[in-house]
Length: 204
Image (cartoon, rainbow, N blue to C red; front, top):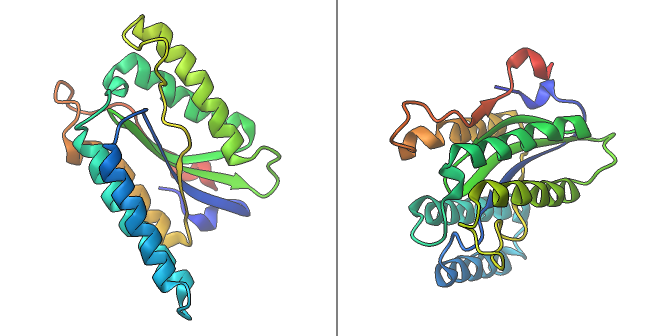
């Protein structure tokens, strides 16, 4: 696994992308309201930055549980051809100057660590917007009418969390790399092939 000390100067982010309609709207709204209320209540605290990070982690745990349950929405990413497109586009980000220490493509969402060197001219959000567009177009061709023309493939936006240090990076990488195995998906494969980790020597 990569270590922040091995990465060039810049920002390292934990990114989550999800398919459109993959979380129940009421549950998502309640989670967002709880997050906002907790942040407002803690805003005057002297250690607000630390509290803010804890709140973000609590929000993510709840939100990821909703994604993992997959009670609503599609699971197009469990199709190998679609997952292969997404994995390929994530790795293509490295040609745009980013580093991708690890990622996991799951049935209705994607977790990835993305490092943006200080020298990068392309913003993370613009890069991910373009990735959304390219993968959605390719997925529509693969799905051949299974996705209605008026329906979105991806949910707009992403969940971003700035990784603070090497210990947190290791923790997040372990979470990502073990995610598919914990969920036992897909059952028809012994190993889900769309889980990637940058070889240690490549990050030095």
